[in-house]
Length: 136
Image 1: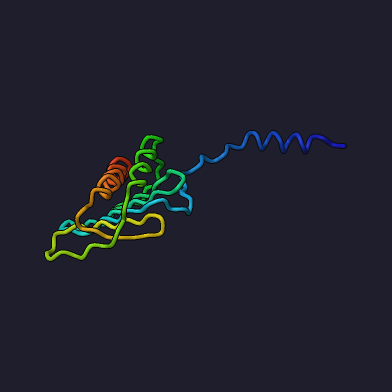
Image 2 (image 1 turned 180 degrees about the horizontal axis):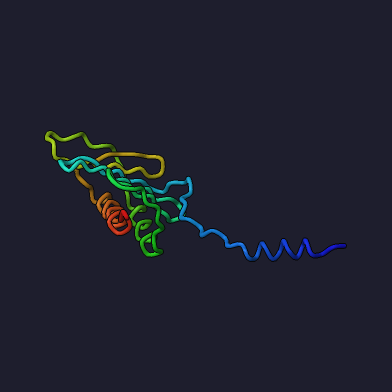
């Protein structure tokens, strides 16, 4: 029995560098924020997945995938427990309004003014976008 082919395969498999695991989000979404409008033409999106990773995008620039720290994830989930989406708010008259759309637990609503339960969630997601979205 020739053992050298087995030894050779083992040596090659150990010597081959494994690619670094990329941050890839799962398909299960925890919460999404879409912030759009205003004179600046905002079009920001934050998608948080159940595994704690996020996908961030803006009107211009790349889409970024990152993972939240444990503290960021715990804080967001704590605020999500208090979130009451309610019904969508009617579009106000005028042109310079920012529309916030949140989707959570199969429900989606849009608002132009943030309620007490929306404010902490939107603030958390905006902070994540500011911290992690940095185009090269």
